[in-house]
Image 1: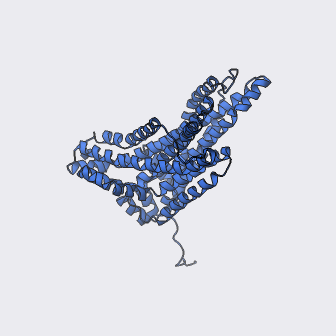
Image 2: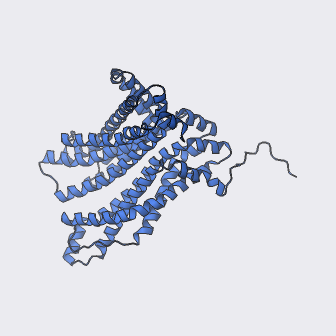
Image 3: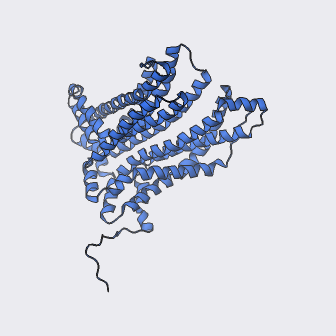
Length: 468
């Protein structure tokens, strides 16, 4: 009998078979509310993809005269549908990654315990991927009928704006359903695997410490990558400014994405800096403000995931809107109304993805703080005091996101308008800015203050004794 090698690496004792999928079953049962974020993102993506696929098929199947077909080709609506579909695919990957990060954070202790008893990183990643895939199927199934309704409405709107001949009828092709489900499963698994990289590789002892203290150990790599992405986005912005107008508009999205992901990686640092800068105002608010600053720092890692979609929505919408308003302000001539409407419709879809991702990430973080809120109340804080703390904290998150979104938008937009319009100053009407602030406040408030108001209706002692 061969003696075991003393230096041989330890083998996993975690069951590889059906019992190895226990984390998946437990997460789906115990953390179902945390998985609402990926579900909502996947459902929205399925809705958009269904609407665009059926619209494209309706345009192809329409019986049109040669003149009508030529006029339709001149509007590039078929290409726009393809762009919307592509946007839905990569936004689904990005937002599933963001929302799954928040969902995995709720499972941190479970993952740490499984790693301690021998689960390998690959087994953890496969479990997370299974969660995303299982959630994707009902999400796509729900998004399909919604997409059929959205496709009918979208084609009607295109017809009303003169972009599509009235002879085009809507064709609700059922063949789109398996295609949509397949796309959603693949994109969800990719996004989930990206989100699972760090949680699956962190040492068990470190993971247990982080789950207890909620402070990540070591962030030099994260900070370095974030700085590199921000710098790379700035360099790319300068390069984009030298391209032709249509190419510059397409490439500008990559500038925004690079900077937004960089902002998300730097989120703990940026939120901590925001808390320090807000100290004078927090002191004026007394103990409530100081407590809000402290909780923001302690929750900075979790809340940083929400910065990516918040900044993404604000910066992308800012670039799109400011490019039109600045051009009209400088030249005195507005673009055709139908072109502006189509551009803003695409922007609305983009922003909807980001808003859903931000809202669900904030909701996941807020639900995970149920015991913290109960402890504050058991320590003597009234329900009104707890909500005041959360309101202050939400205000700092909103302010940070707005400042960062403005910075990313300006870094992307200024070189473009200087090249195209020979001006360094974007023009945005105050009403547009006010709407952006109110929309951001609605998303952040709905994801932080509103769930806190619901959670604190329950007696504090029941929240402590109940499941996490």
